[in-house]
Length: 91
Image (cartoon, rainbow, N blue to C red):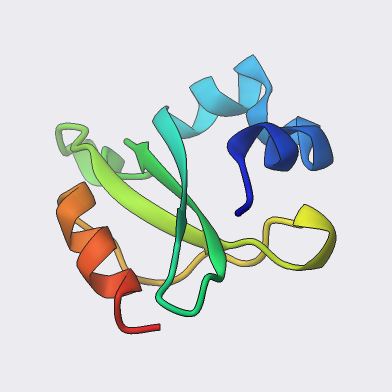
């Protein structure tokens, strides 16, 4: 099982204070799919305040690839952590 500490170590710029503040990230977790593929799951305000809208927290997902590399963001936005977990059960 992949742990958040290993992902942080392999991707230090992702977890800097400045990056966290810029994107409005609130929380990070590593969750695994049904096939045991690790994913970085983060609760964030990222881009939700565009066009004068009030910031809304949501969950975003990035697969973790070989060598703990954080891969491209999955297009879906999730309202709750439960929704993320249900989605991961499909894979």
